[in-house]
Length: 77
Image: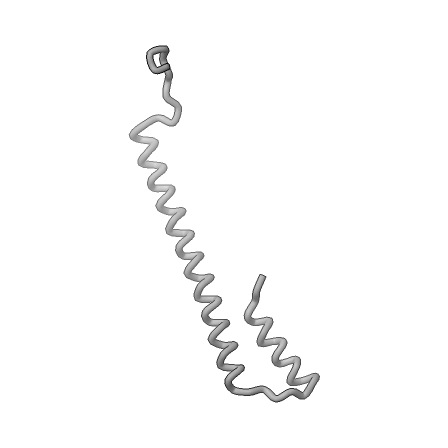
């Protein structure tokens, strides 16, 4: 699983332990990627809850209209 916070932690560790230069562009880019990832995950969760809610409502209305198991007679075959 991809975690954008892991990218930020790795960048901080590289600066601390290896003495690499941290550029402003890479910081801004990683923040944008992290915000985009979590926004996408939030949207998928919201969409999944809406779909589940709609399925519950459609299931409740369909059971009131028709039975799930219908009796078959010899005329149907």
